[in-house]
Image (cartoon, rainbow, N blue to C red; front, side):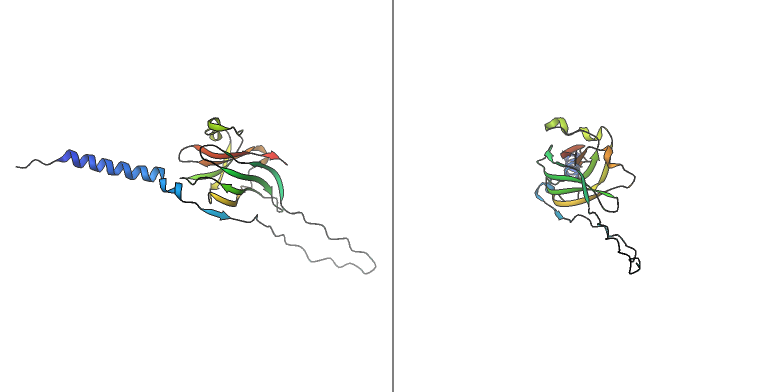
Length: 185
């Protein structure tokens, strides 16, 4: 009777499973894949009532000037876990809604990156890598691309004035790739 070699097979199965899990978890190929997104700032169209009929002996009032989107706060992204640069703006649109706008973003790609609006201060270096999930934060969604300019809607029930920073947050590893302190305009 021939003895089967079970240990080498068990080791091989465990090794292949470990490599498969590691590839899924870390997604190292994303370090060499860039995704560029170029979005314009959203324009909100307002419906207007038809002009009122004014008797000819009265001078009509001049049309009111509609104001466009207004920047409420902005800041420059600093690097944390990965080299990150660009500008962040908190913008109120003409309909009263808010967006966080990333402009000229340049960071590494990674697994499970999110855009967070937070109440945490922005700190340089490793001191700033892990603090954004310590306090209050709102996830505005997955990062659309690691390069370019893009918009993230702030939910209507969120008061953006109670937040002071934006982080490009890796939810898988609980670390900030980069962040910006929002200075009120």
